[in-house]
Amino acid sequence: MMSTAVSGKLCSANGKSIPDGIADTARLIVSGIDRPRIVSNITGCLSQFGANIIESQQFSTEAHGGLFFLRIEFHVSCLRMILPELELALTYHANAYGLSWRLVPVADVKRMAIMVSREEHALNELLMRWRSGDFLADISMVISNHPHHGKAVESLGIPYHYIPVTPDTKSAAEDKQLELLSGNVDFVVLARYMQILSPRFVERFPYRIINIHHGLLPAFAGANPYRAAKERGVKLIGATAHYVTSELDAGPIIEQDVTRVDHRHGVAELRRRGSHLERSVLATAVSWHVQDRVIVHGNSTITFTN
Image (cartoon, rainbow, N blue to C red):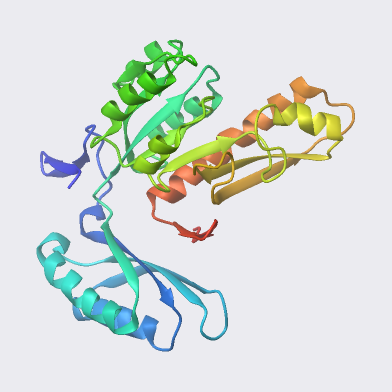
């Protein structure tokens, strides 16, 4: 459990207060082969415990026999007390239909680490939204291969770790990063961290590393996408938030957005306009991940957005 009680109120690990009602709220994520009566059985199971469904979304890949995905957010009195019995009942119903599922108490606030290089716009957006309570998460630490952001981050009470990276020290730097992260965070956000993570790093956080790419994937992957876009004469530029896999810029896409440009805009202007997209797209993807709204399906995602 990643929340604590302070003066009768729930607080996250960094002391930020958790909204009222969260302590007895949970999310149920279900997936499997689609068949009749899955929803009625799952919701019936919840109703037996007096649960009130706050939000429910589902998706099937085919009309008959496709894959089925379900996200339910519900409130039930004394959630922690009844949790073992509820999980046992859900296991029974899930096994009957061959379903995979996970139950996430909302008060178990996810811990994230932010990794960033020199550019600060994506980092600043995440910090601003965190401070304003736009997403319920703990920022456990910020790791950077540049020292520039330390003062601003530490002024918010967030640990800042400067770990320089060179071609000769990359492996040792990752060792230090993983030592800091292991057991202390649930997911990692690359807020314009301009280093390629090794496969061993990615394997430690499967589908739990979110990257913002300054281009509209799958077009213009790799370095300098704005220059490539200018040379190609595109009329739209974009930003893409995706989960990181061992293949560069090829992981499941979470969110994208675009803005229109034309022949008058140079690379610098494309980069300036694109930075606004990067900020919002990354923050949206982090918010959805924190709320368990993203389900990885092959190399794509099901996003139950609100």
